[in-house]
Image (cartoon, rainbow, N blue to C red; front, top):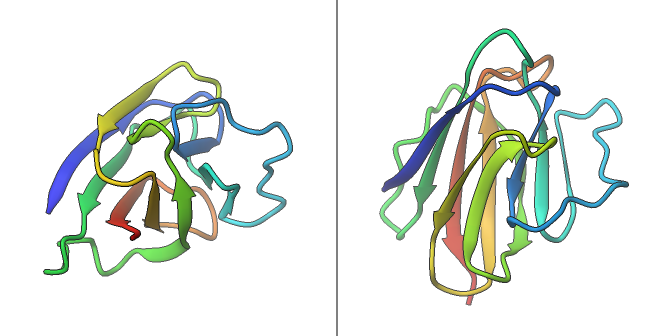
Length: 130
């Protein structure tokens, strides 16, 4: 079930997903389409030329309507201390925050339309961990 979405304009070619807390300084892509810490995922995206479209889904065990042509760039666990999920520019200039409730640890799957270069769209699926 889709629970949110955002069209973001980013100045830096990296989009951050996860906790509203500050992102670690040492979290770098190093040529990969995505990288993660315990609280964040960063994804390489197209900067300064187009809006980045992000759809946010919550998996309730019935499947989701994610775009099947996208490639999974991250599938792991994130800790969301205040039970809010943030999508935004790593510079903090634009962001979307969604209160998702539930537990503090979530299984997160991020898929992107162009993982080998710079993504213009991403789907994010959240599933609560017990």
